[in-house]
Image (cartoon, rainbow, N blue to C red; front, side, top):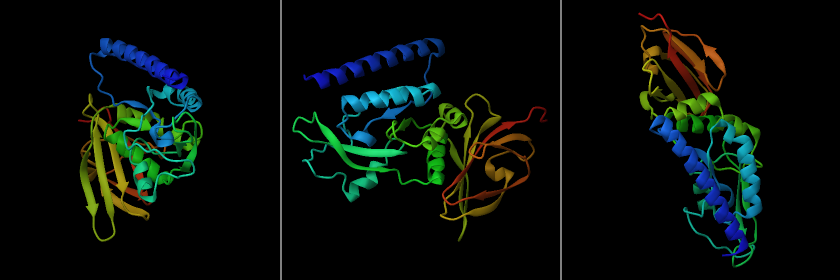
Length: 279
C-alpha cells in the first residue's frame, strides 16, 4: 500500500470511529436514530480520483460550513456509479453521462471531475467541470422535495468553491427541521388543467398532529397566480393556524383561501402549527 493510500485509509478509519462513537452515544440517549443522514459525498466533484490535498481542503470546509448545522458524514466515494479509466487528454463525461452526473446526492454548486494522469492514478488533473445548471427556483424546489420526503441529504458540489447561496439553502434551519422530522410527505392535491399545473404536498410532524409542512409546487415554466382553498392545502377550514413561508422568510395570514404568486419551477414551502385556543 503506497503512502497516499495509507493516508486516505487512515482518514476513513478515524472518521468512521468518530461517527460510530457519536452514533452509539446518541443511541444510548434516544434508543433510536430516525433522522435522515446528513453529509457530503466526493463523487460529484472528483469521481474516484480524489487526492490527499483535495480531501483535506474539503474536510476543513465541511467542518466550517456543514458540521455546525448537523451534517455528520464525510464520504470518500470509490466510484459506485461507474468506473472510468481515461488516458491523458480525454474528457469525461460524455454528453449522455452529463445528464446522469447530477442525479445523485445534492447536485448543487461546483461540480468537477478529476481524471488520472498516471497509470497508478496517484496524480490527477481537472477534467470536465462546471457549476450546476439549476436556477435558484430549481434549487429551492429540489431541496424542498428532499426535506418533505425525509431523504438523506448529501451535498455533491465542491465545498471549497460552491457559492454561498448553496450553503444558505442546505443549512436552512426550517428546512432541516422538516427533513430531520423523518416522515415522508404525501400528495394532498393536484391542480391540473390546460394552463395550471400545481402539486400540493403535506408532511406531518412525527410527534404533533397539529403541526407540519406544506409544499405548493409550480410545475410550469412560467409564473402562476393561483387561488387555493384552505382544505386543498390539507388544512382544516374550521381551525386557525400559524403559518410561516420558509423561503420567503415571512409570516402568512391565515385565511379560508390563499392567493399564491409562484414563479416557474418554484415552490412555496410552509411550516404550519395549530393556534392554541382552537375549539
